[in-house]
Image 1: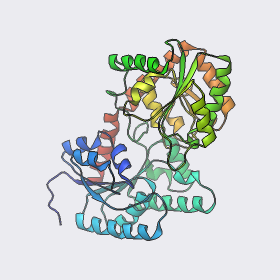
Image 2: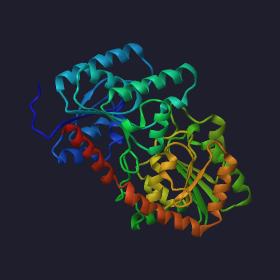
Image 3: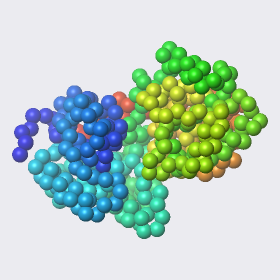
Length: 387
């Protein structure tokens, strides 16, 4: 039994180290400052160095994102042993594999407070038996939890529609989003404006040229093919339009080789590998596009709005919560390059509308998605569960 010398012992569980780091930016220091003890559990990896540097004790469990039955059983047993030994006050879990294993182990160990953050419906990317199994696992993860947080209202509605859990047993914190936006980082200031000028000069893009942009994983399900098709048609008649694709190939679902060839051969498509300076590249864009097929929320859309950029998103779960259609941006049908092209032309041809949407987007993010607001809402959930 461990000695209690804090307001509460909080355990945060994700499948891999990347998630434990990137899904909780600026959170651990706030949690510790409030007097809580923070422990993280996930598979070992290089991102844990940053987590530990923030004062979090980390316990590694060799979970995998793929289906590995024998290893999964061993991880389930190890989690059960950890929970029995550590006696956490709250176990907060998310990401598919960690959610299933933690929910089962937490119930078996009689943990007093299990909190699940539902970040998306990963099983919808599959068909056949994989979809059925994935949905069943998600349902188990939801039912094991004492409380479930969905990161958007449309995600909550779809989860209830899919009978994962009744709607009244799920909660959305504020207007949604799981991490919000760091408004000190994502803002137009002298530094980002200067970086914008440097980026345009480096890429050979004129001051009055229009940049259509995307930031994120380079994979088909992010709507990259439709975006390229729409841009390809527009560039034929408009020689002042460029595109920035900011991000790296998705290792599990990379873009087809022919698509990469198309990108590399077009002098007006600028492929930028991921760096931490994403806000400056978004600032360099005139229009931000996320033509995704599947999201839990679409946080990059509100990051672009915070940079006062008009956004185009698809009218799907999550994205429709991140865009006020007609005010902060436009929503289009998913997998529809023609409708996306129309929306892009509307934005390109109307600079006044772009500026107005950008200003409205910044204000909307300030009021609803400031990261400090998001984390304070989560800590209030912790407090209610503890008391």
